[in-house]
Length: 191
Image 1: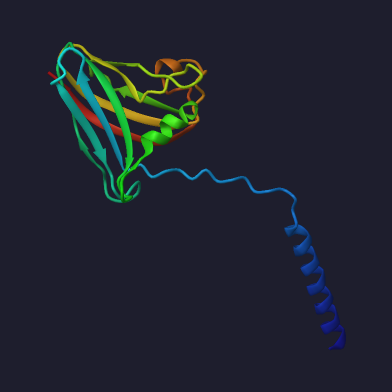
Image 2: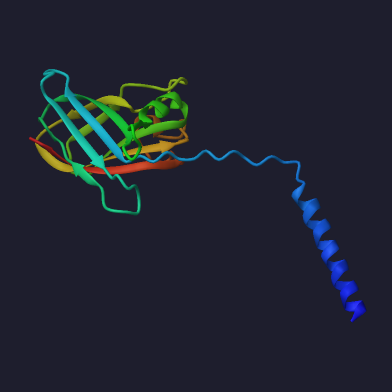
């Protein structure tokens, strides 16, 4: 019995020393870049020829991903028109509302907004802003409509995209890599 106690005590001491040595690592942990909660995406379309023609598309999901479904207010745009499109990202779960757009603008080289039109929707998007390196950002752009049509428009915010990859500067998400901060879909009517 005495030998078992002595052996258990030696095992305990050895484990304690091992844990102490292992926990004394000289490497500092990487800081965690916590993602912001984006509850609301708002796209404001202002007709470049008629400043009174302002259309707002909004997607709101106050409890964030995984809870209740979000609600979209879908836009109706005029055919054969050009619109300045301005995108806002908000966290309305905070009081007061947190404007994530400001952070995206400050970290412009780490973000890009993509506008993805579904087949059948006669709408094109071109970037009207850029980051500090001359690459597209997408908080503002020009949405140009053609003949009457309907279809989906997805707005995607990507964190740390590869902006120099093939097609990315033209708005093609295929080679962008990075992480999607949010992706929302609108049903657009052009009439």
